[in-house]
Length: 114
Image (cartoon, rainbow, N blue to C red):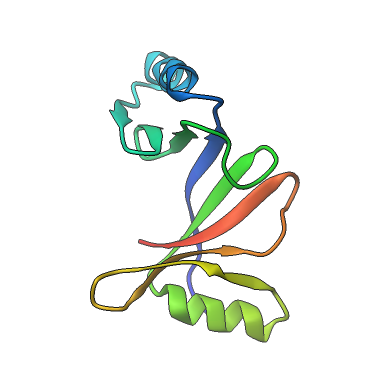
């Protein structure tokens, strides 16, 4: 079985201003440095705040694994549905990230290579 770890928690912000405010709050609380990206703002590596609502009613949970393709095989073999339309690949064709179908507790789940 693949190794699975919590990579980060994603929060759906309404816009960039709110995303930065949330990231700043985490920085003030825990010292997790704000890093602004194209579609989100990270607080350290632990929390990603989306600049606009993304997948999941509440946000997403990123589950890290060293081999996303093997994780997909493991999970689908156990009856878990994977949304391959959401798949992101590295330039060399390696599967880098993909969302599972549906939500768990209001959160979308995506696998990400770590």
